[in-house]
Length: 178
Image (cartoon, rainbow, N blue to C red):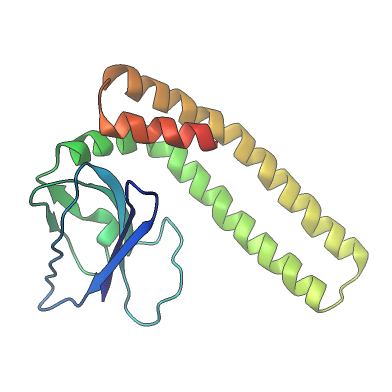
């Protein structure tokens, strides 16, 4: 099963899903302007997938026909065609490149340490162990604070070369949240 979701102009989540039939799927609907959207391929249970999961991808959904070509199990590497905004978004993602790699490494480590801390709390481990894990989490949080400005530099570079772009507007909304 594959799910599509995006935030509409009324800031409400639109969610749809469909089955893969012979490796193909189809969604139909109406959208008035480009919106960031997400596709997630579920191959078992429907639990949340992290952003860097190979079966979850963000893309720009816009009026018209959008074709997606890829390999099952590697949705993240799919190629989108038929969307001007997606071409611009691909350019932005290319600028992010090593920043995203660095961010994902810290994110995975943060999640692992956080899980260890939660387990240690449930098991009533010594305070020394809890403090050590908390200190690791703080150090990882500080690494996030070093990475975030790198995204802002890439965003600024993109926006100045793509004025009037829906992707630039999206980036500005993200920068507001950072």
